[in-house]
Every structure is written in C-alpha cells, then in structure tokens.
Image 1: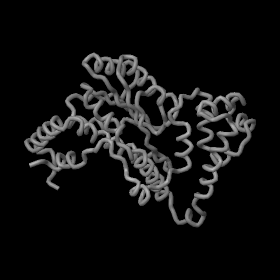
Image 2 (image 1 turned 90 degrees about the vertical axis):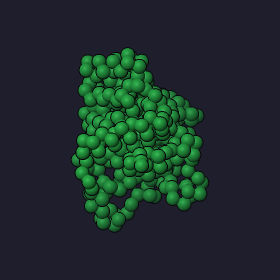
Image 3 (image 1 turned 180 degrees about the horizontal axis):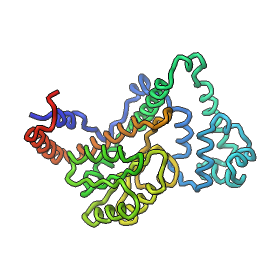
Image 4 (image 1 turned 135 degrees about the horizontal axis):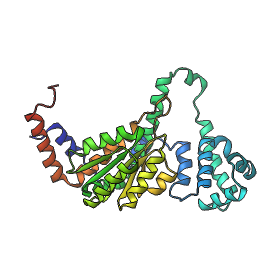
Length: 314
C-alpha cells in the first residue's frame, strides 16, 4: 500500500502543456497587478546597469515616474537623457514618449486600485503582511498557468546526478528545505551554504562527478557572494537554475533559467510563502520526471522510517 507521501506524489503529478482554461481565468484569476505589468515590459531584455536602475526606479515609483519628462526622469535616476532613450529603445519602443504612454495607464490603474484609508484602518500590520503574501501567491499562480517551464526544469534537475543546491545567508533555509525533500526522490543531492573556496570545491566536485545543474536560491538582501557562487558554478560547467524575487539584475543575467516568486517584506524579516510553493512545485516536477525512481526511493524511505521508528503516530 502506498504511503501518504507516495500517494500525494502520484496524485499531484503535473500535466505538461496544460494551461489554465479561459473559463477559470474569467471566474477566479485576478488581473495582473500594476507592478507586474511594469515588470512584464522589462522581462526578457538584457539591460545594462544604468538601464536596470531606470527599470527599478520606474517600478518603485510608478505613479510618479510615468508622468515625468525625459529630463526629469534622467535627473531622478542619475543617468543621462540618451541613456533613457536607449533604455526605451531596448524594450522595443520608438522612444521615451512611447514608453511613457505605455506606463501611464498602468500608473492610473495603480492609483485607482489603491485601498482607501478606511480599509487600511481595519487592517493591522500582521494582516497587511499576510495580504501581501496572498498577492505574491496570486502572482505565482498566474505565472504558472502554463507549467511547461516547471516540468522542463524538473526533468533537467532530476537527470543531474549529483544535483547541487545553493543557498547562502538568508537563503540557506530554502536551500536546505529543498535538498532535504529532494533526497527522498533523487540519489545524490549536495548543498552549498558557504561561499568562497569551499563553494568552489563543492561545485567542481559535483561537475567532475557528472552533475550538470545547480539550483540556487537568492532572496533579499542579495549577497555578492551568491553572485560569485553562481558565476563559479557556470565557470566549472554547471548550468544554473535560479529561484529569486528578481526579474532583473546581475543574478538573473548569470542564470540559465530564472523562476521568480515575490517575498513578503512588510515585517522586520522577510517571509517566503511564494518561494516555498515554487520550490515544492519544482520538487513535484522532479518526482514526475522519473516516477519509477521516485516510487522506489519513497518505498525505501518509508521502510527505513518504520524500521527505525522515525516519526510519532499522529
């Protein structure tokens, strides 16, 4: 008889190529938030450091920035006017006026959708933090309407033996969660939680042992040593899949595959509901990629757990 975890693995198998239906989208999906719509304009484009600063400013100050002249925007960001023009052109616009014209309706929708003061008074800080995480999960749900990328990366990570999981500083907890679960269904999972030469040794050994991929977590604040480890991974010949909250920036530029999930930032320390769900989705895709291996390994683990009495009888 299959264990509870085995049954869950089978029942939750992802169907490749299946998109959320239009009926479901009309009935339950929430329209993209203004910030998401702005980030969508920038996604998929290689931007210079100056251009990334412009993009970040437009995202962070949308309701103001969408109505600035090119001179005002350049001054606020600290770049030249030609830099703003090149930025607009790199996104496919004829110039900055065309980009501003695209941004203004988004900015107006942000203003129109802002909650009223009365509503804000009825929410305490913890509720506001939870509301922000619900928005992060809603955004992730929308992004996963087409699961093909998750299915694809799950297949690649499952094939990489060994598989290296990277997480430094605040991202250690996510990396260790992923690695702990992945070891149930994958024969060789290695974790890198320290930078410098220790990280390089681990990455090099994994590549020499036949590994092809590393999965890295990068949550804010984004450490320079994480960027160094990602570059080192690619330097030894590993491909890198990155789970982060960033759409743009040097970390995203260095990775072969980037999966974004927002983090909760309303409290003194961030929360990671969406990255956690995204991680579980990738684990599911790994399990689906080799169902026979998954079944065999879960059966062996259940046998060991029973033999050594690992768990309480809840």
